[in-house]
Picture 1 (cartoon, rainbow, N blue to C red):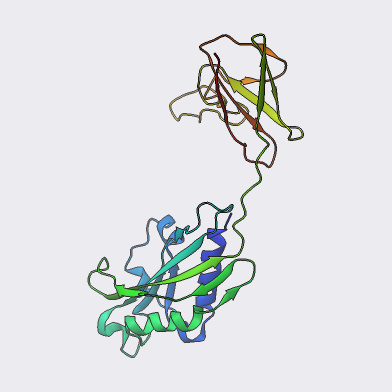
Picture 2 (picture 1 turned 90 degrees about the horizontal axis):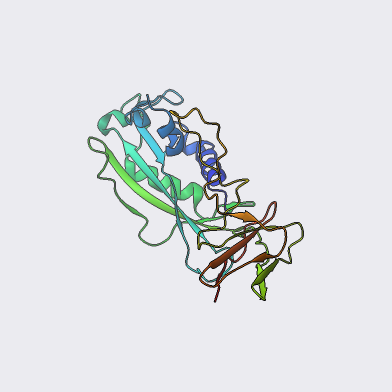
Length: 251
């Protein structure tokens, strides 16, 4: 997995620490959205180190996978930034002093080829800049920086569930130590009822904890099966993703 929150936090603090951007207000979109009383104009109107009129919005990132058949899978993060200049107000005696196009070049200067230990390397490439037309009334540009993530390893999975049927009696097994096997015979998904429970409704006084599939059974011993049933089974273990979901029609 890649830590998108940490990537955003690190890039935010990198830009906040850049001396050339010390008069520019920088806002992560993730925090901006959560502050419902803050208007978008605050991005460039907020005073930083005695100056205002310029702002940078760090937008929520996109994630791209170019090698879907490999474990992980390998992912690159596309970070986008909106550089805002509030007209001449940004250039006056109390302004930060930058055009929007200058702001994006300062971001390039601060981030291109930057290596963030444990996370990945930042790279500006291709057609990385364009006007940001969704910010009317201010001169704004959107630019993109890519990060190839170092760590995209997936959580290991439990071993597959193996079914052995003899004389209409089914025995299930899994090679993963301490794995619990859940199964269904009606073709429904064999969810883990210890985790897969209905959320508590605001209007419902019933305590939270009703399993989403009451037909999912914990395997404890061999059980009888009859033709026409559809056996499905999955193994669950602490800290692991479930492995391959068994699907076997009973004939």
